[in-house]
Image 1 (cartoon, rainbow, N blue to C red):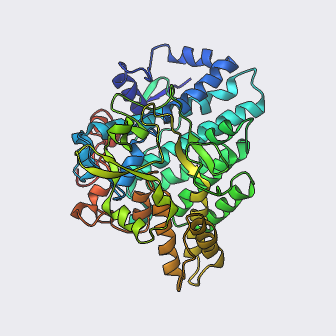
Image 2: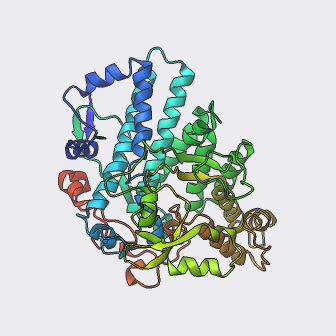
Image 3: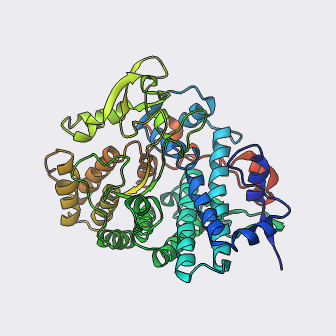
Length: 470
Protein backbone atom coordinates (compact mmCIF):
# COMPACT_ATOMS: atom_id res chain seq x y z
CA UNK A 1 0.00 0.00 0.00
CA UNK A 2 1.34 3.42 -0.94
CA UNK A 3 0.74 5.95 1.84
CA UNK A 4 1.25 9.68 1.30
CA UNK A 5 2.00 12.52 3.66
CA UNK A 6 1.67 15.98 2.19
CA UNK A 7 4.33 18.41 3.30
CA UNK A 8 1.77 21.11 4.16
CA UNK A 9 0.02 19.21 6.97
CA UNK A 10 3.34 17.73 8.07
CA UNK A 11 4.80 21.20 8.55
CA UNK A 12 1.77 22.32 10.52
CA UNK A 13 2.01 19.29 12.79
CA UNK A 14 5.65 20.05 13.53
CA UNK A 15 5.02 23.74 14.16
CA UNK A 16 2.05 23.19 16.48
CA UNK A 17 3.62 20.75 18.94
CA UNK A 18 3.31 23.21 21.82
CA UNK A 19 -0.35 24.10 21.18
CA UNK A 20 -3.45 22.55 22.69
CA UNK A 21 -5.29 22.20 19.39
CA UNK A 22 -2.39 20.62 17.55
CA UNK A 23 -2.33 18.25 14.62
CA UNK A 24 0.35 15.73 15.58
CA UNK A 25 1.83 13.49 12.93
CA UNK A 26 3.11 10.50 14.87
CA UNK A 27 4.89 7.38 13.58
CA UNK A 28 1.82 5.40 14.62
CA UNK A 29 -0.57 7.74 12.77
CA UNK A 30 -1.88 4.95 10.55
CA UNK A 31 -2.59 2.75 13.57
CA UNK A 32 -4.30 5.63 15.35
CA UNK A 33 -6.58 6.26 12.36
CA UNK A 34 -7.54 2.60 12.20
CA UNK A 35 -8.50 2.71 15.86
CA UNK A 36 -10.43 5.99 15.56
CA UNK A 37 -12.53 4.88 12.62
CA UNK A 38 -13.32 1.43 14.01
CA UNK A 39 -15.53 3.00 16.66
CA UNK A 40 -18.59 5.13 15.81
CA UNK A 41 -18.09 7.35 18.85
CA UNK A 42 -14.48 8.21 18.07
CA UNK A 43 -15.27 8.52 14.36
CA UNK A 44 -17.94 11.07 15.25
CA UNK A 45 -15.36 12.76 17.47
CA UNK A 46 -13.02 13.09 14.49
CA UNK A 47 -15.74 14.99 12.62
CA UNK A 48 -16.58 17.21 15.59
CA UNK A 49 -12.87 17.92 15.89
CA UNK A 50 -12.98 19.53 12.44
CA UNK A 51 -15.86 21.76 13.54
CA UNK A 52 -13.82 22.67 16.62
CA UNK A 53 -10.95 23.84 14.42
CA UNK A 54 -13.30 26.22 12.59
CA UNK A 55 -13.70 28.16 15.85
CA UNK A 56 -10.02 29.06 15.76
CA UNK A 57 -9.20 32.78 15.70
CA UNK A 58 -7.56 32.41 12.29
CA UNK A 59 -10.44 30.50 10.69
CA UNK A 60 -13.82 31.82 11.84
CA UNK A 61 -12.84 33.13 15.24
CA UNK A 62 -12.77 36.57 13.63
CA UNK A 63 -9.44 37.31 11.98
CA UNK A 64 -10.18 36.48 8.31
CA UNK A 65 -13.49 38.30 8.69
CA UNK A 66 -11.87 41.37 10.25
CA UNK A 67 -9.42 41.39 7.32
CA UNK A 68 -12.37 41.33 4.93
CA UNK A 69 -13.79 44.45 6.55
CA UNK A 70 -10.70 46.54 7.23
CA UNK A 71 -9.13 45.95 3.81
CA UNK A 72 -12.50 46.89 2.32
CA UNK A 73 -12.60 50.00 4.55
CA UNK A 74 -15.68 49.13 6.55
CA UNK A 75 -13.50 48.96 9.65
CA UNK A 76 -10.51 50.84 10.97
CA UNK A 77 -8.12 48.61 12.87
CA UNK A 78 -6.68 50.65 15.73
CA UNK A 79 -4.96 47.84 17.60
CA UNK A 80 -1.30 47.69 18.49
CA UNK A 81 -0.36 44.42 16.77
CA UNK A 82 2.28 45.39 14.15
CA UNK A 83 1.58 42.34 11.99
CA UNK A 84 -2.13 43.20 11.75
CA UNK A 85 -1.34 46.87 11.15
CA UNK A 86 0.88 45.81 8.26
CA UNK A 87 -1.97 43.85 6.68
CA UNK A 88 -4.35 46.80 7.05
CA UNK A 89 -1.77 49.09 5.45
CA UNK A 90 -1.14 46.67 2.55
CA UNK A 91 2.42 46.28 3.82
CA UNK A 92 2.49 42.65 5.00
CA UNK A 93 5.57 40.56 4.28
CA UNK A 94 5.86 36.82 3.69
CA UNK A 95 7.10 36.19 7.25
CA UNK A 96 4.09 37.93 8.82
CA UNK A 97 3.06 35.75 11.77
CA UNK A 98 -0.67 36.35 11.30
CA UNK A 99 -0.49 35.40 7.63
CA UNK A 100 1.38 32.22 8.54
CA UNK A 101 -1.26 31.33 11.10
CA UNK A 102 -4.11 31.95 8.66
CA UNK A 103 -2.54 29.55 6.19
CA UNK A 104 -1.78 26.91 8.80
CA UNK A 105 -5.19 26.91 10.47
CA UNK A 106 -7.05 26.55 7.19
CA UNK A 107 -4.92 23.58 6.20
CA UNK A 108 -5.54 22.03 9.61
CA UNK A 109 -9.28 22.17 8.90
CA UNK A 110 -8.60 20.66 5.47
CA UNK A 111 -6.42 17.90 6.94
CA UNK A 112 -9.11 17.01 9.46
CA UNK A 113 -11.78 16.97 6.76
CA UNK A 114 -9.61 14.78 4.51
CA UNK A 115 -9.21 12.28 7.33
CA UNK A 116 -12.98 11.96 7.76
CA UNK A 117 -13.68 11.77 4.02
CA UNK A 118 -11.09 9.05 3.44
CA UNK A 119 -11.86 6.92 6.49
CA UNK A 120 -15.47 7.34 7.60
CA UNK A 121 -16.82 4.60 5.34
CA UNK A 122 -14.51 2.08 7.05
CA UNK A 123 -16.34 2.45 10.37
CA UNK A 124 -18.14 -0.91 10.56
CA UNK A 125 -21.09 -0.06 12.80
CA UNK A 126 -22.10 3.20 11.14
CA UNK A 127 -25.07 2.98 8.83
CA UNK A 128 -24.54 4.05 5.25
CA UNK A 129 -26.75 7.08 5.89
CA UNK A 130 -24.64 8.13 8.88
CA UNK A 131 -21.37 7.67 7.01
CA UNK A 132 -22.71 9.63 4.04
CA UNK A 133 -23.82 12.46 6.32
CA UNK A 134 -20.43 12.67 8.04
CA UNK A 135 -18.70 12.67 4.66
CA UNK A 136 -21.00 15.45 3.47
CA UNK A 137 -20.26 17.54 6.54
CA UNK A 138 -16.51 17.10 6.04
CA UNK A 139 -16.81 18.03 2.37
CA UNK A 140 -18.71 21.20 3.27
CA UNK A 141 -16.05 22.21 5.80
CA UNK A 142 -13.24 21.47 3.34
CA UNK A 143 -15.00 23.58 0.72
CA UNK A 144 -15.38 26.45 3.19
CA UNK A 145 -11.68 26.28 4.05
CA UNK A 146 -10.58 26.33 0.42
CA UNK A 147 -13.03 29.11 -0.34
CA UNK A 148 -11.54 31.33 2.36
CA UNK A 149 -7.96 30.43 1.42
CA UNK A 150 -8.47 31.23 -2.24
CA UNK A 151 -10.13 34.54 -1.39
CA UNK A 152 -7.21 35.58 0.82
CA UNK A 153 -4.21 34.33 -1.16
CA UNK A 154 -5.25 34.69 -4.80
CA UNK A 155 -6.72 37.35 -7.02
CA UNK A 156 -10.45 37.05 -7.72
CA UNK A 157 -11.80 35.37 -10.83
CA UNK A 158 -12.34 38.75 -12.49
CA UNK A 159 -8.60 39.53 -12.72
CA UNK A 160 -7.65 36.74 -15.13
CA UNK A 161 -10.74 34.53 -15.46
CA UNK A 162 -9.39 32.13 -12.86
CA UNK A 163 -6.15 31.14 -14.61
CA UNK A 164 -4.04 32.72 -11.86
CA UNK A 165 -2.46 30.64 -9.11
CA UNK A 166 -4.45 30.07 -5.94
CA UNK A 167 -3.41 27.55 -3.26
CA UNK A 168 -2.23 23.92 -3.16
CA UNK A 169 -5.00 21.34 -3.33
CA UNK A 170 -4.46 18.63 -0.71
CA UNK A 171 -7.32 16.16 -0.99
CA UNK A 172 -6.08 12.99 0.71
CA UNK A 173 -5.44 11.94 4.26
CA UNK A 174 -1.70 11.93 4.96
CA UNK A 175 0.08 8.82 6.20
CA UNK A 176 3.48 7.99 4.73
CA UNK A 177 5.35 9.14 1.64
CA UNK A 178 5.95 12.88 1.50
CA UNK A 179 4.61 14.85 -1.46
CA UNK A 180 5.21 18.51 -2.31
CA UNK A 181 2.01 20.06 -3.71
CA UNK A 182 2.31 23.15 -5.89
CA UNK A 183 -0.31 25.86 -6.11
CA UNK A 184 -3.29 25.04 -8.28
CA UNK A 185 -5.09 27.56 -10.44
CA UNK A 186 -8.03 29.46 -9.02
CA UNK A 187 -10.27 27.64 -11.49
CA UNK A 188 -9.04 24.28 -10.22
CA UNK A 189 -9.59 25.26 -6.59
CA UNK A 190 -13.03 26.65 -7.35
CA UNK A 191 -13.99 23.50 -9.24
CA UNK A 192 -12.94 21.40 -6.25
CA UNK A 193 -15.04 23.59 -3.96
CA UNK A 194 -18.01 23.22 -6.30
CA UNK A 195 -17.50 19.45 -6.49
CA UNK A 196 -17.35 19.13 -2.70
CA UNK A 197 -20.44 21.26 -2.22
CA UNK A 198 -22.37 19.45 -4.95
CA UNK A 199 -21.62 16.13 -3.27
CA UNK A 200 -22.53 17.63 0.10
CA UNK A 201 -25.93 18.67 -1.28
CA UNK A 202 -26.59 15.04 -2.18
CA UNK A 203 -25.28 13.62 1.10
CA UNK A 204 -26.59 15.99 3.76
CA UNK A 205 -29.99 16.36 5.44
CA UNK A 206 -31.96 19.59 5.34
CA UNK A 207 -32.21 19.76 9.13
CA UNK A 208 -31.30 18.05 12.39
CA UNK A 209 -33.05 17.40 15.70
CA UNK A 210 -32.63 20.95 17.06
CA UNK A 211 -32.27 24.49 15.78
CA UNK A 212 -28.75 24.66 17.21
CA UNK A 213 -27.71 21.67 15.13
CA UNK A 214 -29.65 22.76 12.04
CA UNK A 215 -27.96 26.16 12.08
CA UNK A 216 -24.61 24.95 13.42
CA UNK A 217 -23.83 21.89 11.33
CA UNK A 218 -23.50 21.50 7.60
CA UNK A 219 -26.79 20.94 5.80
CA UNK A 220 -28.06 20.69 2.27
CA UNK A 221 -29.20 24.32 2.48
CA UNK A 222 -25.83 25.57 3.73
CA UNK A 223 -24.10 23.78 0.86
CA UNK A 224 -26.48 25.34 -1.67
CA UNK A 225 -26.02 28.80 -0.14
CA UNK A 226 -22.24 28.54 -0.38
CA UNK A 227 -22.60 27.29 -3.95
CA UNK A 228 -24.71 30.35 -4.75
CA UNK A 229 -21.96 32.55 -3.33
CA UNK A 230 -19.04 30.95 -5.19
CA UNK A 231 -20.98 30.97 -8.46
CA UNK A 232 -21.65 34.69 -7.94
CA UNK A 233 -17.95 35.25 -7.26
CA UNK A 234 -17.25 33.57 -10.62
CA UNK A 235 -19.92 35.56 -12.50
CA UNK A 236 -21.71 32.29 -13.27
CA UNK A 237 -25.03 33.94 -12.74
CA UNK A 238 -27.48 31.27 -13.89
CA UNK A 239 -25.86 28.72 -11.58
CA UNK A 240 -25.88 31.19 -8.69
CA UNK A 241 -29.57 31.92 -9.21
CA UNK A 242 -30.46 28.23 -9.32
CA UNK A 243 -28.47 27.37 -6.18
CA UNK A 244 -30.04 30.28 -4.30
CA UNK A 245 -33.54 29.28 -5.40
CA UNK A 246 -32.91 25.66 -4.40
CA UNK A 247 -31.73 26.74 -0.94
CA UNK A 248 -34.73 29.00 -0.37
CA UNK A 249 -37.10 26.30 -1.64
CA UNK A 250 -36.12 24.08 1.30
CA UNK A 251 -38.48 26.30 3.27
CA UNK A 252 -36.63 26.72 6.57
CA UNK A 253 -34.79 29.95 5.76
CA UNK A 254 -36.66 33.21 6.18
CA UNK A 255 -35.86 36.88 6.50
CA UNK A 256 -36.30 37.70 10.17
CA UNK A 257 -38.99 40.36 10.76
CA UNK A 258 -36.51 42.47 12.75
CA UNK A 259 -32.86 42.45 13.71
CA UNK A 260 -33.20 40.50 16.95
CA UNK A 261 -31.58 37.44 15.44
CA UNK A 262 -27.90 38.06 16.09
CA UNK A 263 -26.33 35.19 18.02
CA UNK A 264 -29.52 33.20 17.82
CA UNK A 265 -30.31 30.09 15.84
CA UNK A 266 -33.33 31.37 13.97
CA UNK A 267 -34.72 30.98 10.47
CA UNK A 268 -32.45 33.88 9.47
CA UNK A 269 -29.40 31.68 10.10
CA UNK A 270 -28.27 29.14 7.53
CA UNK A 271 -24.90 28.20 9.02
CA UNK A 272 -23.04 29.72 11.96
CA UNK A 273 -20.00 28.66 13.92
CA UNK A 274 -21.48 27.82 17.31
CA UNK A 275 -19.71 29.38 20.28
CA UNK A 276 -20.36 29.40 24.00
CA UNK A 277 -18.73 30.96 27.03
CA UNK A 278 -16.59 27.86 27.52
CA UNK A 279 -16.17 26.75 23.90
CA UNK A 280 -15.07 29.40 21.43
CA UNK A 281 -12.10 30.67 19.46
CA UNK A 282 -10.91 33.16 22.03
CA UNK A 283 -7.14 33.45 22.43
CA UNK A 284 -5.00 35.38 24.87
CA UNK A 285 -5.35 38.40 22.57
CA UNK A 286 -9.13 38.12 22.22
CA UNK A 287 -11.70 36.76 19.82
CA UNK A 288 -14.60 37.69 17.58
CA UNK A 289 -16.38 40.00 20.02
CA UNK A 290 -13.22 41.25 21.73
CA UNK A 291 -12.04 43.20 18.71
CA UNK A 292 -15.43 44.77 18.05
CA UNK A 293 -16.09 46.04 21.59
CA UNK A 294 -14.53 48.85 23.65
CA UNK A 295 -12.52 48.10 26.77
CA UNK A 296 -15.38 49.35 28.97
CA UNK A 297 -17.41 46.34 27.83
CA UNK A 298 -14.57 43.86 28.16
CA UNK A 299 -13.25 44.15 24.61
CA UNK A 300 -9.99 45.25 23.09
CA UNK A 301 -11.41 48.31 21.32
CA UNK A 302 -9.45 47.57 18.16
CA UNK A 303 -12.01 47.44 15.32
CA UNK A 304 -14.31 50.44 14.82
CA UNK A 305 -16.60 51.85 12.14
CA UNK A 306 -14.64 53.49 9.34
CA UNK A 307 -15.60 57.00 8.31
CA UNK A 308 -16.62 55.58 4.93
CA UNK A 309 -19.07 53.12 6.49
CA UNK A 310 -20.48 55.85 8.74
CA UNK A 311 -20.99 58.07 5.70
CA UNK A 312 -22.77 55.25 3.87
CA UNK A 313 -25.22 54.79 6.73
CA UNK A 314 -25.73 58.52 7.25
CA UNK A 315 -26.93 58.94 3.68
CA UNK A 316 -30.14 57.35 5.01
CA UNK A 317 -30.11 58.04 8.75
CA UNK A 318 -33.39 56.22 9.49
CA UNK A 319 -31.73 52.90 8.62
CA UNK A 320 -32.42 50.59 11.58
CA UNK A 321 -29.17 48.75 10.98
CA UNK A 322 -27.31 51.90 11.99
CA UNK A 323 -28.84 51.65 15.45
CA UNK A 324 -26.75 48.55 16.15
CA UNK A 325 -23.82 50.61 17.33
CA UNK A 326 -22.48 52.28 20.43
CA UNK A 327 -19.85 54.86 21.23
CA UNK A 328 -16.83 53.93 23.26
CA UNK A 329 -13.16 54.57 23.79
CA UNK A 330 -11.00 52.66 21.33
CA UNK A 331 -7.39 51.55 21.59
CA UNK A 332 -6.20 54.97 20.42
CA UNK A 333 -7.87 56.61 23.43
CA UNK A 334 -10.47 58.40 21.32
CA UNK A 335 -14.24 58.06 21.06
CA UNK A 336 -15.36 55.83 18.17
CA UNK A 337 -18.38 53.88 17.03
CA UNK A 338 -18.52 50.12 17.57
CA UNK A 339 -20.92 47.51 16.25
CA UNK A 340 -23.21 45.72 18.70
CA UNK A 341 -23.61 42.61 16.56
CA UNK A 342 -21.32 40.71 18.92
CA UNK A 343 -22.00 42.00 22.43
CA UNK A 344 -20.33 39.33 24.56
CA UNK A 345 -16.77 40.61 24.67
CA UNK A 346 -16.24 39.09 28.10
CA UNK A 347 -16.52 35.43 27.09
CA UNK A 348 -16.85 35.56 23.27
CA UNK A 349 -19.93 33.33 23.30
CA UNK A 350 -21.45 35.03 20.23
CA UNK A 351 -21.90 32.78 17.22
CA UNK A 352 -19.91 33.59 14.10
CA UNK A 353 -22.25 34.09 11.11
CA UNK A 354 -21.09 32.30 7.96
CA UNK A 355 -24.26 32.07 5.86
CA UNK A 356 -27.60 33.73 6.51
CA UNK A 357 -30.82 34.30 4.65
CA UNK A 358 -30.29 38.01 4.02
CA UNK A 359 -27.02 37.35 2.22
CA UNK A 360 -28.65 34.59 0.19
CA UNK A 361 -31.43 36.97 -0.90
CA UNK A 362 -28.89 39.65 -1.79
CA UNK A 363 -26.89 37.09 -3.77
CA UNK A 364 -30.03 36.09 -5.67
CA UNK A 365 -30.93 39.73 -6.29
CA UNK A 366 -27.45 40.63 -7.54
CA UNK A 367 -27.26 37.62 -9.86
CA UNK A 368 -30.71 38.42 -11.26
CA UNK A 369 -29.87 42.10 -11.72
CA UNK A 370 -26.63 41.29 -13.54
CA UNK A 371 -28.32 38.76 -15.81
CA UNK A 372 -30.24 41.32 -17.85
CA UNK A 373 -29.77 44.75 -19.35
CA UNK A 374 -33.34 45.51 -18.29
CA UNK A 375 -34.35 46.13 -14.70
CA UNK A 376 -35.15 42.77 -13.14
CA UNK A 377 -38.44 42.99 -11.26
CA UNK A 378 -37.68 40.17 -8.83
CA UNK A 379 -34.32 41.69 -7.89
CA UNK A 380 -35.97 45.07 -7.37
CA UNK A 381 -38.64 43.48 -5.17
CA UNK A 382 -36.00 41.78 -3.00
CA UNK A 383 -34.19 45.10 -2.66
CA UNK A 384 -37.23 47.22 -1.78
CA UNK A 385 -39.82 44.90 -0.29
CA UNK A 386 -37.53 42.76 1.83
CA UNK A 387 -34.09 44.24 2.50
CA UNK A 388 -34.90 47.95 2.62
CA UNK A 389 -38.35 47.55 4.14
CA UNK A 390 -36.97 45.62 7.10
CA UNK A 391 -34.33 48.35 7.55
CA UNK A 392 -37.09 51.00 7.74
CA UNK A 393 -36.09 52.54 4.42
CA UNK A 394 -38.40 53.65 1.61
CA UNK A 395 -38.48 51.91 -1.73
CA UNK A 396 -35.64 53.04 -3.95
CA UNK A 397 -36.40 54.38 -7.41
CA UNK A 398 -34.22 52.61 -9.98
CA UNK A 399 -33.75 53.71 -13.58
CA UNK A 400 -31.33 51.09 -14.99
CA UNK A 401 -29.95 47.63 -14.35
CA UNK A 402 -26.57 49.16 -13.53
CA UNK A 403 -28.17 51.36 -10.89
CA UNK A 404 -29.98 48.33 -9.49
CA UNK A 405 -26.72 46.41 -9.08
CA UNK A 406 -25.13 49.41 -7.37
CA UNK A 407 -28.07 49.71 -4.98
CA UNK A 408 -27.87 46.01 -4.11
CA UNK A 409 -24.13 46.31 -3.40
CA UNK A 410 -24.77 49.24 -1.06
CA UNK A 411 -27.29 47.14 0.84
CA UNK A 412 -24.77 44.30 1.01
CA UNK A 413 -22.24 46.67 2.52
CA UNK A 414 -24.62 47.85 5.22
CA UNK A 415 -26.36 44.56 5.91
CA UNK A 416 -23.23 42.41 6.07
CA UNK A 417 -20.88 44.90 7.72
CA UNK A 418 -18.63 43.28 10.34
CA UNK A 419 -19.21 39.84 8.82
CA UNK A 420 -16.19 39.92 6.50
CA UNK A 421 -17.75 40.24 3.03
CA UNK A 422 -16.87 43.72 1.82
CA UNK A 423 -13.33 43.11 0.53
CA UNK A 424 -14.48 40.39 -1.84
CA UNK A 425 -17.63 42.29 -2.80
CA UNK A 426 -15.37 45.08 -4.04
CA UNK A 427 -12.79 42.88 -5.75
CA UNK A 428 -15.25 40.63 -7.58
CA UNK A 429 -16.88 43.78 -8.96
CA UNK A 430 -13.49 45.05 -10.18
CA UNK A 431 -13.40 47.89 -7.68
CA UNK A 432 -10.49 49.27 -5.69
CA UNK A 433 -10.43 48.35 -2.02
CA UNK A 434 -9.60 51.82 -0.75
CA UNK A 435 -8.96 55.25 -2.17
CA UNK A 436 -6.31 56.27 0.36
CA UNK A 437 -3.66 53.69 -0.58
CA UNK A 438 -2.15 53.14 -4.02
CA UNK A 439 -1.60 49.46 -3.19
CA UNK A 440 -5.36 48.93 -2.83
CA UNK A 441 -6.21 49.16 -6.54
CA UNK A 442 -8.15 46.30 -8.13
CA UNK A 443 -5.69 43.68 -9.33
CA UNK A 444 -2.85 45.16 -7.31
CA UNK A 445 -0.25 42.86 -5.81
CA UNK A 446 -1.02 43.88 -2.25
CA UNK A 447 -4.76 43.25 -2.39
CA UNK A 448 -3.97 39.60 -1.67
CA UNK A 449 -1.74 38.08 0.99
CA UNK A 450 1.74 36.59 0.48
CA UNK A 451 2.32 32.86 0.57
CA UNK A 452 4.07 32.25 3.93
CA UNK A 453 7.82 32.07 3.38
CA UNK A 454 8.30 29.19 5.78
CA UNK A 455 6.01 27.05 3.62
CA UNK A 456 7.95 27.96 0.49
CA UNK A 457 11.17 27.06 2.32
CA UNK A 458 10.05 23.51 3.14
CA UNK A 459 7.83 22.76 0.13
CA UNK A 460 9.76 22.56 -3.13
CA UNK A 461 6.44 22.53 -4.97
CA UNK A 462 5.97 26.19 -3.99
CA UNK A 463 9.38 27.24 -5.28
CA UNK A 464 8.98 30.25 -7.56
CA UNK A 465 5.26 30.50 -6.76
CA UNK A 466 5.23 33.47 -4.38
CA UNK A 467 2.61 36.07 -5.19
CA UNK A 468 4.07 38.95 -7.23
CA UNK A 469 5.21 41.92 -5.19
CA UNK A 470 6.32 39.90 -2.16
